[in-house]
Length: 129
Image (cartoon, rainbow, N blue to C red; front, top):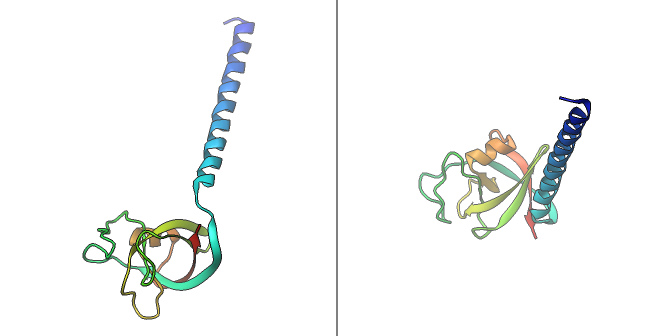
């Protein structure tokens, strides 16, 4: 390969790497823009993992990868942000009704794992817009 051809190949490689980096950054930025904004203050509640034996009141069969929350007073499908430690996730109400006394939220096992909630913990939640 001649020196001019080698330089040209190096420039094309550098341009391709830069283009990929810009595409990833733009895609990452757009992904965060697609998330709904939070609404209202953060509220704390005790939460723990739970796995119902049958489909939830919202008709969801909870499996090993199901992400969602059970809340006794909110309608099915409401989206909430949950925060525990340095982790914040967007999730959906997939069950209504009974939550054990003293607890405000039930987390699917997969969601509890994602948030790193072990046992019953105080977490924060808020609505989306």
